[in-house]
Each structure stands twice: as C-alpha cells, then as structure tokens.
Image (cartoon, rainbow, N blue to C red; front, top):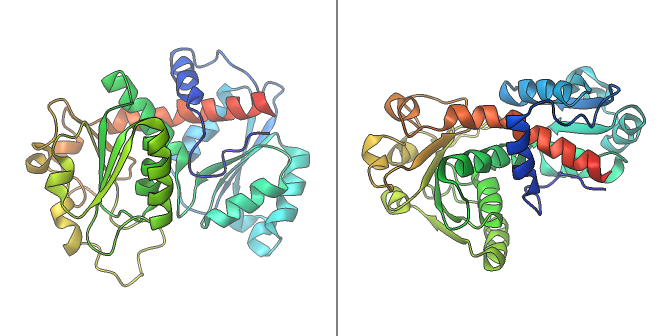
Length: 302
C-alpha cells in the first residue's frame, strides 16, 4: 500500500503520469464505478477543492467533499475511528488539515490510500504541480537552481526543500532572521541531496539567493492560522518581495511561481505575477493533473 501522507513522494513517476493526463485527461479511469473518494477540509480552499473534485470525476469516481466541522471529526470522534469507517466506504481519503501528525495518524489507521492535501508543515500536492510546471518550462529538473523567498518555516518552503532535492534541484531558501525552515527538514533535505546531486542553502540574503536562479518561488507571508501569532509579518519580509529589481538578478528566462492566493503588492508585485516570467497560472492548472496522477498511482498500488 502506498500512501502520500508525508511531505514528498519517494519517486517521481507521478510527474510523467501527470504529463500524460494533461494531454489526455480521460485516458485513465481507476475510479470507474464510480468509486468514492472522501475529500476532507479543515481549512479554506479554492484550488485544492476544485482540482480534486474535478480530477476525481475525470478519473471516473465520485468525490465526497466534506467539511470536517460538520462531520463527527468536528465533534471529537478520533482520527483512527474515522479512518477505519471511511475505509469501509471509499477507495481513498484526501485530507487538508492542521498538524502533520493528524494526517499521519489517519494514514496509519486507514486501509485505503491517504493523500496529504496540505498540513501546517507540508504541501506535497502543490510541490508536484510546481515540479511539473518547472519541467514544462525548462525541459528538465535535475541541475536547475530554485529559490524560495519568504517565510522559510512555512509548508511550501519545507516541501520545496524536500521535493526539490529529491528531483535533483539546487534549492535555496531565503528568509528573514527568525523565519528559517525546521532544522530537521533541512537536515533531511541535505541527506537526500547527497543521493540525488541536489543541494541546500538557507540564507537571509535575498539578492544572493536569487542570483543565478532558474526558478523563483514565493508564497504569502501570513499562512492560514498565523494571523494572530504576534509576529511582524510585513517589515522583515519587504526585502524578499519578488519584484522586477530582485528578479533581474535571476538567470535570463527564469520562471516565477506562486501557489496562490497572492497578496499582490506584498510578497509579489503585479508586474511580475502578470508578466512573462510568471508560471503561476500553469502551476495552478497543474494541481489538477498532478493530483490525478497521485490518486492513480496510489490506487494502482493498493
């Protein structure tokens, strides 16, 4: 049984499958029946909800979209009990939740594949879509340099570290003091980079990080749940804004990514997000194809 419950997948066969499904959306129907997939949300969503709902239908299945607060999970039923019951009804579980420990507990108790649709620590589905977009634009992944600018402790920075080096990228994270990635994640990424030829750099210098980069990635400075954490999430981040001046230090033809929603004028300017370097709209579409590939891969292995 394969479960994408952690922060990245061990293999990138899903990217080839995602490319295939982008060209022929109805070519694979592992959920014909239709078979059901539970898609559970504890956080607001646009791209995750629409891409999974449409993708499950295109795979021949029936998406059951669930607000966790309106289920017994929201009234204190244990994750383990929920996993065991849902496993009797559906062929896969997709969960957008808070702590990584919650999705790991669901995966441990379920007898069907469990997909991490986002936790506070990791966002693996988004990273697969990012890697698909990079490969479309640059024709390869291994050997490219990708820099993330912003809150280095958020789920995107940490997922890009692990997913990027797994694909052989040189990954740089540029963040203000006090906003560095989890040292455990950095250590795991460096170990994996030794196997794949990638590398890891964590810095507080945005110009140095962007210089020579092939891919520039940013995200909101305030992730869901951080609105009242008491930290100044504007002034320290202003030097890390992705604007034309900063982007000029990247390699010619560099791609800019943002997982969206964007706070225009904060982490990224309109000029860049709507400009020729932006891959954000392809990136958003690729959530559909990457997630269909993940579900197909999991179901084929189950």
